[in-house]
Amino acid sequence: MEAFSSRLQEAGLKSTKQRDLIVERFFELDKHINAEELLEDVRGHQPRIGYATVYRTLKLLVEQGFALPKDFGDGQTRYDPIHNQDPQHDHLICVDCRKIIEFNDEELARRLHTIAEGMQYSIRRKKLELYAECQIPRCPNKLG
View (cartoon, rainbow, N blue to C red):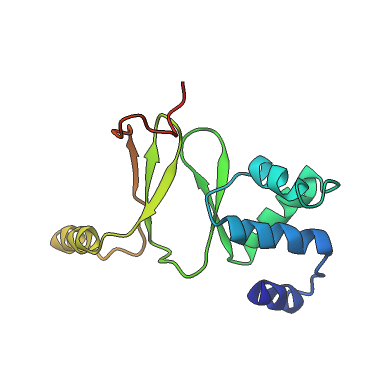
């Protein structure tokens, strides 16, 4: 919150109670979340917050480098909080329940760099999304 407040001041923007609550909940929830899900959570704390305020705050978080918009192929933009994580982390997405798991694999990262170097390239950034079907018996996240 301190870093966000400092960045707002540097950008000449005001901090409001609603904006602060939205940002606080966004980071406390610490998951890939869409605007509607965040709105539902925030309204549990302050029922009069509107969708536009949540959406504008998410947009501000992206503009100020505190969140990344993600599209996992289901037509919804989810926002990934950026804090204390490798910005190059990868994702495993369940095609059944849409659960999203973040992971880092150093061996995989080394292999990708080796592949790129073998083709005489250097990786600047990567985006790895694995879409999979859950194999956990009686998975509580599976729909239907």
